[in-house]
Image (tube, rainbow, N blue to C red; front, side, top):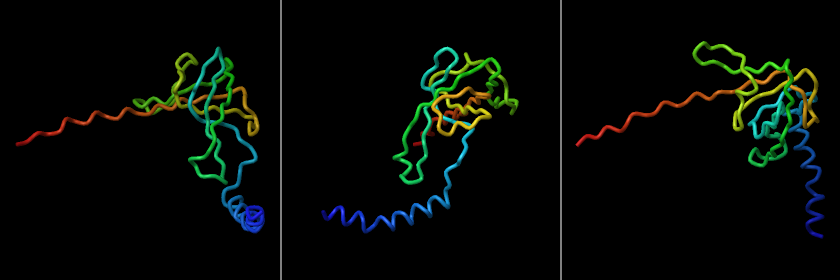
Length: 138
């Protein structure tokens, strides 16, 4: 009984905090792209693991969601070439499990778990240079 009374006594305070959060961090009404890690590739469909950001919980408690992204012949797949500093076209066969990508479309995909991509961008993380060995002086 004490828990119920305590919970009811703070409900209005929690509601006020949620209003402040909603005002300062509005949830978008439309979403046109997702980003995350490729966890599976089947034919012309990528399974991308993405994180759903919930403004009411701490970042460590955000949930992961899998989105299936269909790839058509018209889907533009690119990666950034570090040497030329330009986006270059690649094939779906150049993508592999573990790659970080973003995939987008012109339709609103806010509540969808699968969609047909208009574009996919592969993120390449530059390799860190190997540090030199420590100097040994005596």
